[in-house]
Amino acid sequence: MEKHIVKVLKTEFVTHNVRRFTIEKPAGYKFISGQATDVSINKPGLEDELRPFTFTCLNSDDHLEFTIKIYRDHDGVTAKLENINVGDELILHEVFGAINYQGPGLFIAGGAGLTPFISIFRQLKADDKLPGNTLLFANRTEDDIIIKDELDAMLGVNHIDILSDPKTPGQTGKHIDKPLLKQYLPPKTGYCYICGPDEFVAAMKNDLTELGVAEDHIVIEQ
Image 1 (cartoon, rainbow, N blue to C red):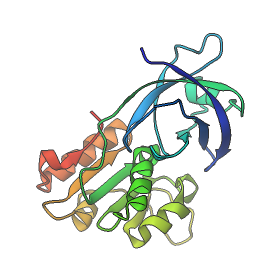
Image 2: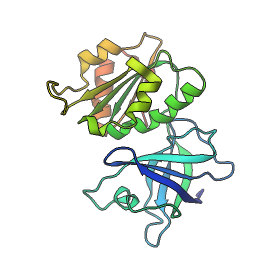
Image 3: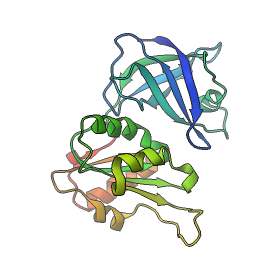
Image 4: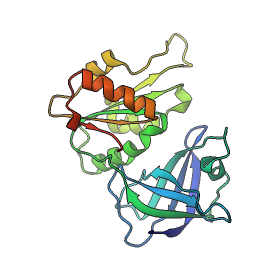
């Protein structure tokens, strides 16, 4: 099994429970935007606790980056990652993943399901190919929106936040449902990309199918 031990170069919170890790990039290590790798912590007893995380940097960057939601309510790998600091080591494995850019369309993300889309959007920006892409981003409150300012800068009005429990006075909670999807569906030639919790992905895929989106134009992690 491919294995690379790398040092953490920088770490910072981007929301109250999402942390960005900048780490060393092994020589010759390559990925396509949207892909992931299994990560473990290089400390006794933790080396074999692997969890998949998506790259949020570009392949052309001289470092790697992960943007990870920290689940403090159970003693898993992400809870342990909260205590990782600069100089600590992580273990990376093979690159994998089925979410990669096929063409312009609608991106549908639930919470931390945004992460594969971060690298895709950043690559599209670098290639001047962002036009024609729209993001529907479901979260609970305004505080949960990952990299909101950057998404606004990249996508403008094509970044649409859908909040189930907004804090802003006068706003009512919303969810991504079939009428909303229908409003933002791309042309028949466009693609629909979905990432988030399993139930979210299944519901979105079912709605898109019922709206007539072809199976081969729905891109999800397999």
